[in-house]
Image (cartoon, rainbow, N blue to C red):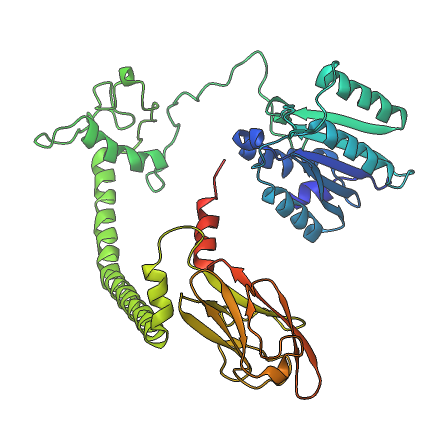
Amino acid sequence: MGGLLFGQADPSGEPRDVVVLLDTSASMSAFYREVSAFSTGPLLREFLRLADTLHLISFSDKPRLELSRRVEGQGDLEVVIGRMLLLYPVEPYSDIIGALAYTEGYVSTLPGKRPKTILVISDGEHNPSPGSPSIPEAGLQGLLRDMQNRLQAQGIRFEFIQVPEGLKRNPPVSAPPQAVPSSQAPVPPAPSLPSAPEPSAPPASALQMPVLVPELSVPEEEAPYTPPENEPGYPTDTAPYPDESWGMLPEYPRAAEPPEWIGEKTQDVPQHNGAQAANKVPLLMFINTSLGFLAVVIVLIILGLLSRKLAEAPKRMLAHGTESADLEGPPMIALFVKDQSAALGRRNLHILKAGYSLSLGGGNSDFLIFLVPVPPRIARVYFDGISYFFIPQKPQFFPDLGGQVLPDCIGKTIRIITDKNYELSIRIERREDPWYALSRLLASVTLP
């Protein structure tokens, strides 16, 4: 592909802008293979030259600029092909009118002196999302003709490639194959008698036919066919070749050597293959045993880690097992501290059962504040089964609350003043259990 692309040169010698508008809506999924083969083959050979700039725009419900790259070497070509292959048609809507308007506006922003080419690859199905403009009365073909006339007046080449008919292009290549005369249809070559066959180099078909002949025509209890002594060349018409009335096998050329000599040569093949297979058996057994042992070790490690996790946090593991399978999950609360990193995993995310409370502060508190030094267990969060209560344990750190209990504390901002007069803002919020969120995400995935 690189040789075909870089071996071509633009006769004008001036770099061009090639804008490809590719339809990635779900209606194109049936032609994904054909579009990929065309985009990475005939399209590049016919329209793209060295030093050109390729602009790739995809559209479904709305257009998106995927790539704008100047092709100066093999690496640039690999980037272009890789990006094209990543565009899989999965979107349900197709707004071709909005995509054409976007492309025309995008081309107007490109340098005016460079030649430009616009290629639209689509099945022509206009299925916009609700609220988008519908196709005009002139239809898609009239819209394309008007756009082509406007662009041609500006010296811009415009081409609409209809899928799948328009993909059947055959651009010229550097070394075309030899053409068959139109007056003569190609037919399979008829077998001809060799003038002087050499016994030391029998044809390849002569080594294949003795294997086919006994299986198809000669029963096991009969002797193999032996040609007449007065005809050392081709066997006569009584040779046990496949019947032409079957219509399944092609006509094989007849062997130039006696079948007895060929049979002696082919008898060594199964013995050699059997020896190789016997040598591979110990190696295969060793590989299978090693893989089985490795699988057992991995399973034991996983079981050990799960047992250790269950022993360290029995209440949390049992909470996951006893709650219902509702997607909302068990009640969980999380602590958010302004300017403090939230990338802590489940460190500040806990399940709080009715009648229990969790501590808040520094050190080994359940809800950890580590942005600045804070004493441990300066407050607690209590859940009575209906509401959450924020209970200060050390009132000197809460200038707004003091020692008062804050009912319904979910979503409310609470100020903390540390020993060194550093002000913190914290907030307690309800969160969904990540296990249930992941389950809902996986259940929502659908394939086109």
